[in-house]
Image 1 (tube, helix red, strand yellow):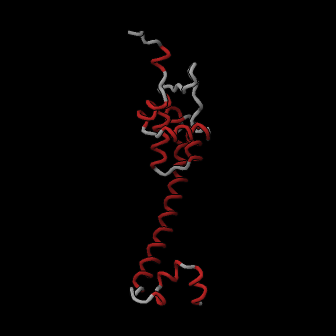
Image 2 (tube, rainbow, N blue to C red):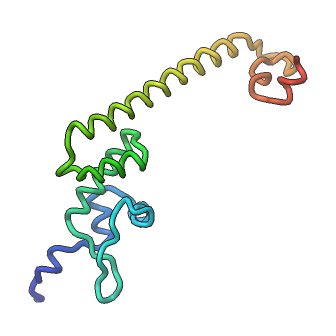
Image 3 (cartoon, helix red, strand yellow):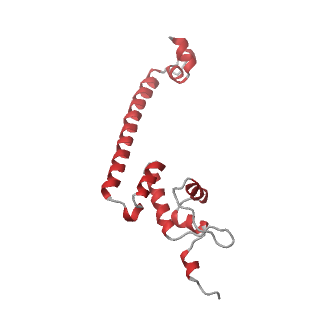
Length: 146
């Protein structure tokens, strides 16, 4: 039986990091390329050797993405110190801007919902020449109708 050395206990291969964080291996590599996640040290054989800290960072990034934060917003949150050190006030500012973006998107979606509902209500479902749905979907068609 091989003894467990300190370095073996403190490092994780990318597959284990993926499993523990819930982030796909290719996504982890992508986050490294765009410098959202620092590049880890390599073993003598060239394999990535992650620390347990990266599990928490990746879980933080994954959850932030699930909540719709952009990569730039997440980068800003991580620059503040990540999940361990960020100031609540600074995080609040980023989250408040994100919330306003979400509210703007919801307003836009409501407008789209009303437009589509009105258009569908006008559609008889019969002849394509008189189809208001095709009129709003086909740019060329809309120009010839005017």
